[in-house]
Image (cartoon, rainbow, N blue to C red):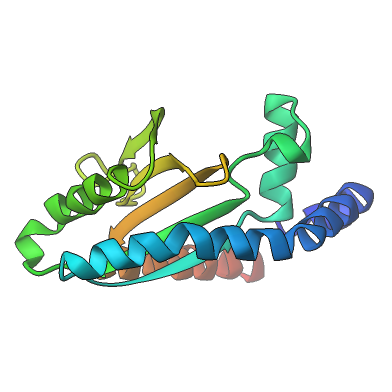
Length: 171
């Protein structure tokens, strides 16, 4: 991922320019998409925060290569993460699905884009519920739902992996 900028400078520059060019549009889309979600989750009494993330130039390029599509055809450049504090830590998995159900009342879910890594974590321990929803503008947006504990574990693993990779390269 870090070497992409240097190994493919032209492709990197093109994608970076397109990301910058579409930033304002993504900001509006993010706001329009998340406002009803916030209202719904607040009504449910959830403690949560929402962050947006933009796919990295390398990830975009990689998807373009694998799927043979143009930048404009990649629907998950913007993704939304809902990170919540569970009311009961023993029930955090069910709370992921309760949030998912609340979102299905607001938006149409993509029938083929539900990934349950809450009940069946990835081999690296990653836990989250991923779903894709149709925004009011007719654009698909991926939503990642996870508890604060799940998020801390993801961040810890990422730091540990980066530390191991750094140490491996330096010793």
